[in-house]
Length: 126
Image (cartoon, rainbow, N blue to C red; front, side, top):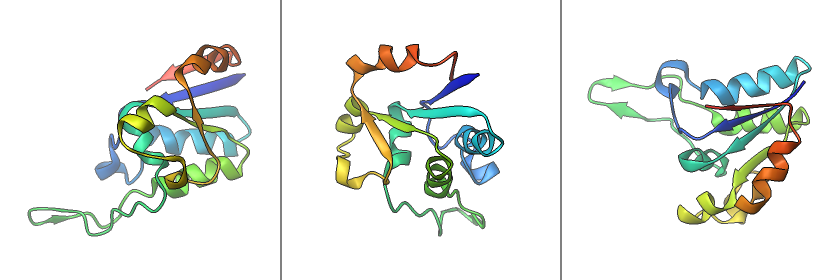
C-alpha cells in the first residue's frame, strides 16, 4: 500500500513526545518497509526550514530537556527514500523561500496537488 501523510498542525505534542508524532511515525514506517511519504501544509511547512533548534525552550520554571528534532526526522525519512513535499503557497505565505528548505524537501504548487494525491492508495490528513 502506498500512503501519503498530510501534516497541517505544527508542533503538536512536541513538548510531551520530543518530536512530531506523525513525522516520526512516517519515518519509522518507511524504515520498516512501508511506502509512505509526507506532505507538509499550513503551519507545518515550518518543519521544512533548515537549522531549527529548540534547545533552551522554557516556560516559567519548566525547561525542555529533550527538544524536538524534526529536522533529523525529516532527514531520516528522506534518507530512507521517502518523499517530503511542502505546499508552495503555504511556504510563500510564511515568507519561506527555497534556499531555506532542508535538502530533499520538494515544494509543490496547489494545482499539482490532485495529481499527487491520485498517486496514493491511502491519504491520511493529520
